[in-house]
Image (tube, rainbow, N blue to C red; front, side):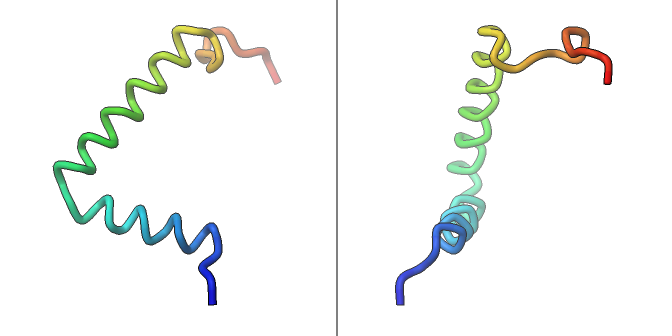
Amino acid sequence: MALTSGERSAIWRKRQREDIAKHEEYKQKERDRYRKKKEKGVIKTVENMTER
């Protein structure tokens, strides 16, 4: 029986967390991605959000 997308993701995340160096590298890449999106304006800062 094939794994669902969620199951594959869960296995990948588990393996990723087991190797500390790999996990830190992944977290750094995610931070960089977030920073680039923020600089581009894709992600708004709190000051730039509209009132609810």
